[in-house]
Image (cartoon, rainbow, N blue to C red):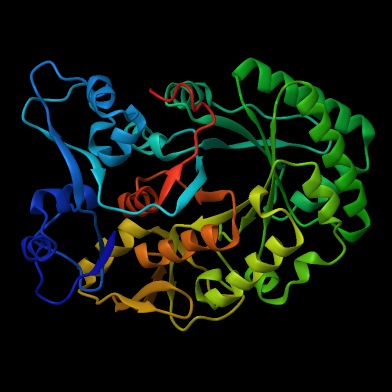
Length: 432
């Protein structure tokens, strides 16, 4: 796997010839929308096919997979353009394998909203171990809202992806989730109703397990929270639900200072959950210190300390694939970052004629442009993704979690697929 940074004047044809692949394959793998208009500084992933197959009359994906002793899911990972297609056609070239040395296995976890585009979902599912529909919420009385998630759950199961129910405390005023959680933890009656409601949803909708995302827990409630998680985990496991994730969302300040460890008995907590997500996401509109501008060494140090304290094989590192654009000058606590996908950031750089730069300290791509005012856009490109993925192997983590999968990010999955075999909990039957 090679990451190519586009230079001034380069064309897809020239880049393809440089690496000995076809221009068609380069465009197809990277889903280049306009091959005649590349952004200076954008990254393209170069994968060199090792074994290919030309489709014959009457050929099917399952037949091709059986011929080469691989799974249909692996065929779809190598050829994502086939995922939303009903048919394959004689003469088409399908990649069976690439010339890439994989460094290990990992589990992948993706977040989707109920309104995700079906074609995007179908292209992404082959790359996932788990999927969650964002999100169920509960109030301090233990009541849980309902969401429209049945279709996503059924499609996930067809692709042998385990659906995980996500729960967030109700946040009516965008800053009240901590209060909801505080009241909830003080009421055994609320917790019992919550347990009852969760089990009903898990059984009726066919979820595999639960991911509980918690806000800041007040110091006086932290022991109560750990006790609650132990009871919750035991209940679910006794009922046959074998996965209980706990999500730890961190701010840039917490990552830089390590203050997250203060006052929490994480050792007891992690003994009773099957996964801990180390998430470093900004969620939509952001005010504060963006994690995208802090040193990547801080993130590595944070992961290193967590891996030393707790079982690394239970941990997932969050890969934030949303970028942000800010109006300049940036004023801490005042400036509001507007979310933008990595694909959209590259297209914006083309529209503005901006050159994409790379900040090796924060491991993020960025560019500036002037419209009515001056703006800066900062996002994670494939170089950034590779840095996060290398943490998995470096510290022996279980895998990665992606916020979010609402748009298909081809380069992300090209890099994942080239470096790792993706774990599948239905390993004995992994054909969709």
